[in-house]
Length: 318
View 1: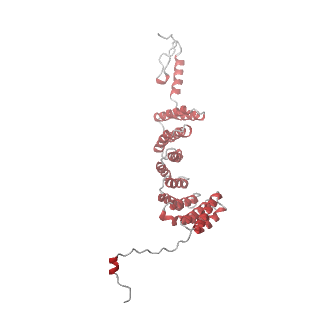
View 2 (view 1 turned 180 degrees about the vertical axis):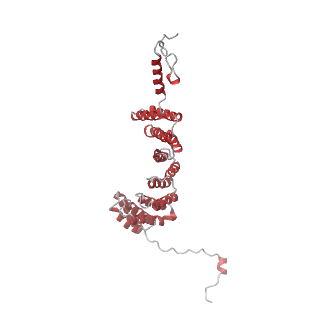
View 3 (view 1 turned 90 degrees about the vertical axis):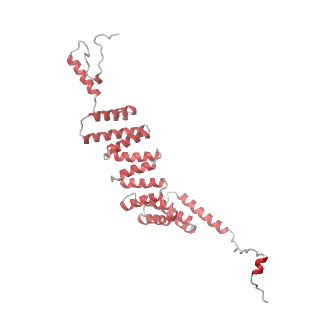
């Protein structure tokens, strides 16, 4: 059944309308067409803003749709490459953040963060994206080695927070039981950023990592001592003292361990932990003191056979 004259619909988004409204003036039809075309072909920046507005209003799927349209518009627009790269980085970062922070879809977020890093590696939005991606890979997806690779890419660009990123990298090696590499990364941090606020963290981590390697426990002991000597006012010093006492106790020097732990009591944030360690060491000392002293064992010789006895030299004086 045909439409009544004057009710034809125009597909504005797919081309200019033909005979839009029968009997209406051409100028009005043209004006309506132009308005519709402009609305259907919004620029990338406009789509980005609309996406941000939708995100603010918690319409996250709509926001993602606007970000997709922004990227599509960006490919069509004859922009300066530098300006396009800036805008692309903002769009990708916004989309990735929505996937992770609002929708909690880590795998979708990882894909967009990686695209951002690949296409705009030097953009300001990318550095923080690397940090977010590294944490997501480690904590949400159980991929600490992937997180290490991402952090390494950030560290190579020497950002202002490079010392902190280096410490996170060392900590990740510790978390996967690669204690030798964790100690090495912590040592590099101490050498390279000797005035950083992360030096005490690195010294403590180095000691803890070395303590996990049996043949390097003496180095661990010295690392804890270095923290105490180098940064005596650090809040981590009591932890280093406690670790020194633990090493002494495990090596059998419980009296000395107790003396060391007593010095940690005043400043340690968990004094009960220290007191429990002291109590256990004292109990072990008392138990050892109560053990009966064994008499020296007599050497039991195997009885000789008659034939062996006959061959043995006589010890009887004739």
